[in-house]
Image (cartoon, rainbow, N blue to C red; front, top):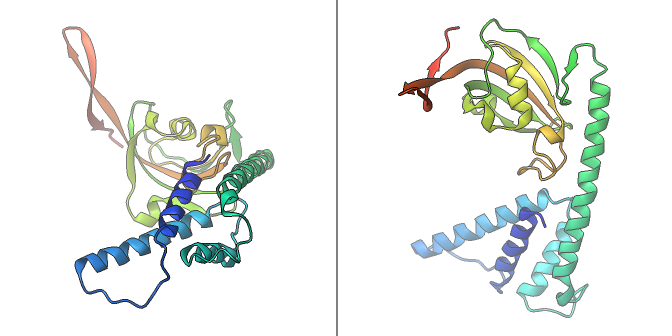
Length: 251
C-alpha cells in the first residue's frame, strides 16, 4: 500500500479517536494554542492527502458524515459496518492506484510518441527526448561534476510540481545523484544552454512516484545549465582520492 495512503489511514484514526464534537473555545494557555495548532495541522494533512488520493475527487460530504458518526458515537446512520471500513479503504486505494498508474503510463507513452514527431525534438537511445531552446558555449558536465541549474518541472497537464524560478534561487547538486533523465540530459548541455527535457517514467521516478508525482509519470523539465564545478582530484602516494571540494569552470 502506498505510504501516503497508510499515513492518511493513521491520521484519520488519530483524529477520529478524539471522540468529541467541535465546540466554541478560546486560546487561554500555551497548551491550548498547541492543541489548536495540532488540530489545524491534522486537518491540513487530511485535506492534502485526500486531494491527491487516486480515483478522486473525494466526496467531502460523505467523508465528514462518516467522521461525524464516529466522533458523536452515532452508529444508527452508518452506511457500512465499521468492521468493514478499513479493508474497503485499503482495497479501494490499491485498485485506484493501479488504475491511475496504468493511465499515467498510457498517457506518457502517447505523449512521447506524438512529441518525437516534432522536428526540433531529439531522442536518445534510452528514450529521453529533448529540445534545444538556447545552445551555450561553455563546457559539458561529467556525471561526477556538480552543476548549478535553474529549472521548472511540469506534469503532462501543465501542473508545475517544482520550480527554482519560483523560489528565486538556482540549485546545485552532483549530477550522478539525481534521476537518470537529468543525469543523461544535462550531460548533453553546455554551460549557458537551455533545454526542455521530456523524461519517460523509467528515467524519472519510475513505478513508485515521488510526492505529488504519481507512479509512471512522464515529466517535462525546462532546464538552464548555469555552471559546472569539477571535482578536485588529489594524489597521495600514487592513489587518487576525490574530495568534496569543487573547482569552478571558466566560462
